[in-house]
Image (tube, rainbow, N blue to C red; front, side, top):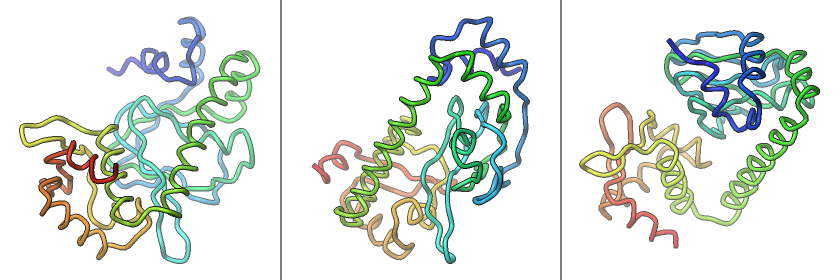
Length: 227
């Protein structure tokens, strides 16, 4: 059985809250389950809840004129969907379960009550949003000034930091990431990704792994390619 209170206690948003306060939040939260590939919410829909991942992984993305841009992947212990609760209630992106996923949800009214009762949480939220804004700024900078090769390498390194799993052959990025998804993540097209990954394979840095995953066979060398 999942210890939801323990998970809440590890989330930066709730940093500083006492066990009794976490228990109160846990009581108003609701567990929801989503199957693999199920859409959790869609872009331009009304945002009514905050989502906290208990198990599974979630992809955040947007689509425009048939093109898709992946913004990030969310793992257990992280939350998403907060912007629609504190600003315009219309979702600016979609969320999709990458695997069978369990989440805790807190509705808009309850979330506002929690922020009112716990000013420290508002400060925590500001710090988290500032961190995400800096990440977005770096991505805009990368799209504006970096070539595709550099963007792909940076994305692989970032994914390795978050989802990397050490195996005998190197560092396995433990999420399904085919050529199309990597293209959507780095702002290019599938054909270009195929060429870049082949270059990285020839350099002895990257290989495809079973289950539509990517293996970094020499992460240190990969890092030197963009330094």
